[in-house]
Length: 330
Image 1: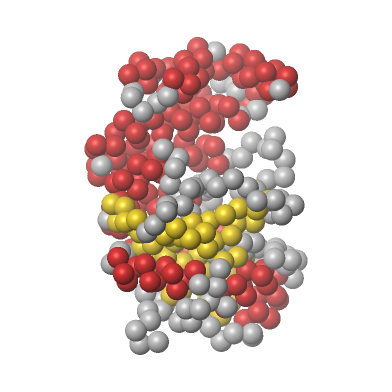
Image 2: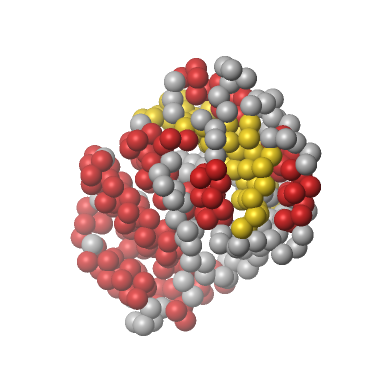
């Protein structure tokens, strides 16, 4: 243990009776033994809180916290305040990990002398079907400087999830995760990147995402208009300001990201909500109209991006109605 830094593994938990044992036991089975495991019951109402206590009795490395419901970010922030580890990892309660995941991550951090490392992930839907990889794992370990890592995030090729990562605890700011927001991992990771300096990416798909219908980011009804789209636009503005200060060479890429997130919002908002009274919608349309010429000159935006920008700047409601009819014909 002397030569093995303590790792704190944080699991935010809410109403997850069926899958929690698989998750927790995949952590206690780690070949890297010097762990503390913090289970945070976020006000569960289905007996999950009692299950957490029961699982805690199985392994002395587990500590259980119970709190009023406040969301995943508040649960993670509570655990960070109680974390003792030199390094911190996160696992979502419906997912699970390979037995050697933290051993691989710690090996990478020590071998390449980085403050953070990540593994790759695979994803499975509720029917057990393997989904296409969102983030393609590298063929071999790769150390990436924070600016280049941010570029990959802004081009939607990087992995912003904290669940695939092991990060030095002293890099986390106070009240790290934004409470009441979605896309919170992206926000915090971007905020931490300047101090992180570099990240190691490992080729192994050691983290296993399970898309359980009904979880925060995994809605049953694809017609639901999640607030994540508005939060993503806010995050785009945040990263734009950060790029201006810390990574000015990424200005064109950050602008492309801001346009892309606004187009995503307009492609998903219900037509019934595309009204002047909707301040977020009104502001997004105004932004696209104000920045149309800049978008046309941007070398990072694709021709398709520029076409959508033009169409939505001219007639957002009309384009959405045409888009809906086109999709119905597919």
